[in-house]
Image (cartoon, rainbow, N blue to C red; front, side, top):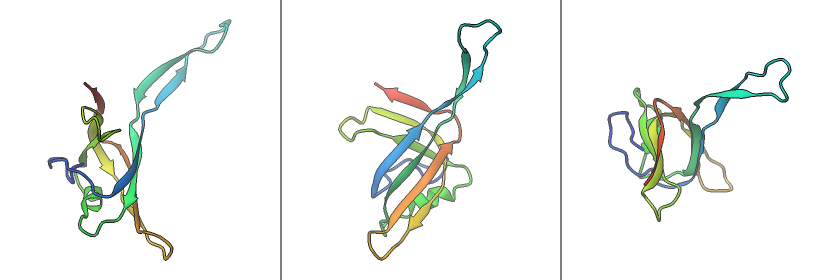
Length: 121
């Protein structure tokens, strides 16, 4: 992830989990006398979340959440195959959770800020 829309993407340290959801709207198009309901789909709505542990050497996720022009995001399902990933521009939120019984956790939600796609070369 970059920390600005024009920045260069880099690794966000100490992340342990991410999710990507790409649902589409379904609009019912059933007519009278149809045997069952029918639908057409709309465009996908890319969004997800990130989580991990706070690292005092990096404020990248927080900085990304403050960006006025969003960020560039690349999501890799495996470090063993960096040729397969999803990518696009995003808006990112930042949260931090501190408690006396565990490590300091960071997390954030993100939504698309433009076209997202998948590279599965």
